[in-house]
Every structure is written in C-alpha cells, then in structure tokens.
Length: 321
Image (tube, rainbow, N blue to C red):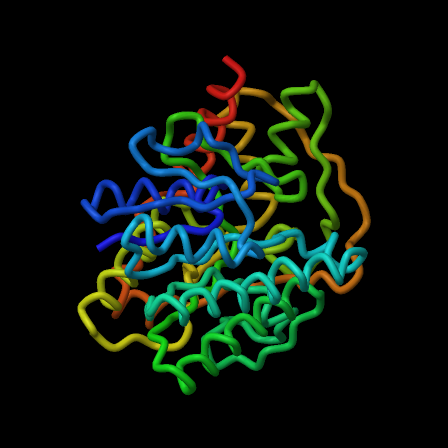
C-alpha cells in the first residue's frame, strides 16, 4: 500500500511521512512548498511539487505511484490571518479538498485521513472538549475545516469513501533532524524567535481564572500525532471501523506560564515574559479528551512538557547551525 500525503513537506506532514516510512508503509508527498520545506523529507520518499487544486497532477500521482489512500494535511492553517483572507482560505481548504476528492473518486482511491482542527469547536464553554461538543467555528479557517469534514461525510454516502478526521489541538515538539514548526503565529516559534533575536517574549493576559492567571491549552507532541495517522491508515486499509472524527488531546493541558518557565529552563535563557492585554474572545481554558483516539488509534501522551520543549528547541537551533 502507498499513501499520498498532501502537505507532506510541512512541519506536521513531514513527521507523518517519517512515521509511515518507519512503519514500512509506502509514502509519496505532494506539496506546493508555500510553507513546507523539501529538506524536511526523507530522501527516499518521492516528492511532487504542486497544488491540490491541480486535479490532473493528483490523478497522475495516483496512477504513477499506485496510491491506495490519502492523508490530507495540505491547507492554509493560519486561523487569525484567515479572517483577513477568507477567499484564499476557502479556496485552499474547501475547493482544494473537493478537487482532491474528485480525483480520488476518478481513480478509485477510497480511503482518506483528514487533518482537521480544534478550531471547529470555536471557544467552547466546557472544561473538557469531546467529539460531541457543539461545533461553533469562529474563523474562516475553522469553518473550512468543518466543511472539509462534511465533504468527507457526504462522499461516504455518495460513493462509499472510507474516512476519518483527526482534530488537532496545539502541536509542538520535534522528531529531530532539524524539522521544526515554521509558523509565524504559534507560541513555541514566537518565543524561540524572540529569544534567538535577544528580545523578551510576550504573552497575552495574566488575569485569567486559572492557577497562575495564564491561559491553559492542550499541547501534544508532533510524533505522537504522527503515530495516530499511521494507526488510522492501517485501520482503513484493514477495513476496520473508525469514528468519523477523533480529538487528539491530552485531557489535562498546561498553562502558558508553565511553558514559559520550562522554555527558560531548557534554553538556559532566564527571562520574565512581557505581559500584554488579553486577546478578545480568548478563553481561559481549552482542553480535550482523547479517549476515543486512545481506544482506536494508539493515541497517548508519550512525551512530557520538558521533552516537547527541548525537542522543539534543539530542532530550531539545528536549523541554524
């Protein structure tokens, strides 16, 4: 079996590709390199540079590489920016997914693992987010991910597509080899870049109703996430049942303050973060359960917070050494 990984040269995608290779599952990557980096990929994995909006390229990739399933990670992933660029977000995440599904239908590729997001829940007013928590996306990005799940659902009814969606929360850490989060919007890279530039990191708000006054969020290691993609692909290949969607969450969460303390310890750079005002609509706590994923996808937290921080920091430093 061979799986096409769209967005496979990105931070998350390249970890999924590596996990597939380590599991002795064939992989081929399609990525337009808008945010991915070809050097993140294992050299032996076939790489196609192009867009999921290119239906002809997709069908050729299926034919040329004997693709039996798709892990669909490609997309425009910046929730905040999506508010200013809604049409671009929908083109990449909704139209792109529709083009991909059409190419799959044309070539009889009937299995897909979809990269969804915690953004489908918006800002839920609950201590623990489950798959049954009401969906209320607050950005075009979150809306586009929910529509992607609907597209898979509807194709399953129409043509028997076999699918599941994995809803990520805050993905951090690294599996090594200089593969790091390149996003200009995520917490870890924002803090690392500030420290590397000699600036003091900044956090938003320290007056939330949490133990240390900072936001509590769910942080998961990218390698753990990648392993659950492999488990999902294997179950789809084996014809085993899967839920339509799974949360990949810790069940606990950590605060931004705890992360700042751990980053200072790991990097050896003493700092007290600057504290700015709260961001409008930013909830005090968002934490998800992962019981369904633990049952079906070998999901578990294999890394401590310190290991998440140290692996991410080492990969970022390796990229400039």
